[in-house]
Length: 411
Ligand code: FE2
Picture 1 (cartoon, helix red, strand yellow):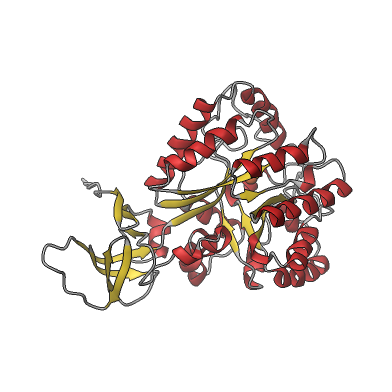
Picture 2 (picture 1 turned 90 degrees about the horizontal axis):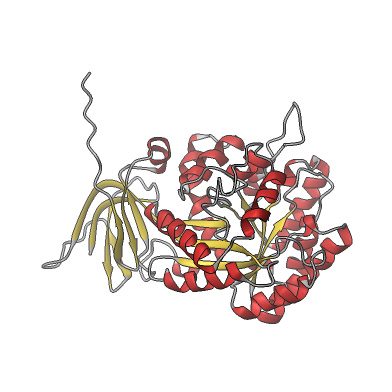
């Protein structure tokens, strides 16, 4: 297959891209097609590496309104409604909703997803379902599963045992929720325990860390210290870290040094955290997000996730990574032209580093032919105008194709 005259990642010069046997085999200014070679004429279109959702919860997805809508919009009503919905969870129910969501995500150009799955269910209903789904979608989606102890590791009966069992059952990543544990000591011990498991089983780590507006919630410094001292470094990710939006500047300055030393990855979920954050504030009202701009300026890897797609915590979401990018750059005031142009990095290359798929990812000769072609010349236009995803190509195969609709203006 030959893709003609695309702008690769906002480059100002057009190039041709050849794909053979599922890999990129040539990227040059002009390539002549072979006889009978499939040619995509993409003159002046944007070519990007595929979108990655670094953080979502596929076990709860598409349950909004069942058994009731979260009319208050608070985290706590979300937990209350989910605890009711959880009682009716079956393997088939989880599989159907997760598959529908993954197909929707694929239709918007996502080819890699990291999903957390609640493992504080002694029956492991959702975990068993998602392990099967991971296998069923592997031809169009790389799905990583995180063992997520939603109700704690130390603060939930048999929490340690359940987490280790989930790891043995085949998750890719180990999670935690230290700010939700009963006390600070439990939070610290939970982090030591889960990082120890990651060393024992050679797994990645992704912790829901300090997802609260409390400036005293400081588990991130513990996790970063563990990342530094164990040498696990960028195999460890801290998700949410919204408390950092409330930390004072002197403490944050000190923390940044440790974060840089540790090489830890960070994931922000701008849609959900702007919705759930600052709920105890009247006015002025905090945004409830981590310091995306400061972290990025300090060279710390930050990627974005959708977190929730139509569930008790967040009623919106369509599986489209342009939504968290759009929200993230607004809420964090990263709206310089070059910041907008480069914001695709939060859901592509930076996310590939977080998921540890960078060695198979990127528009380079010799790498797997995974890419997206948009009906726009650059990411500024794409994000503003939401032009069609013309093609999503996965391992050299076209898995999504869109024919632009024609709008007639009778003015
Ligand atoms: Fe989350």
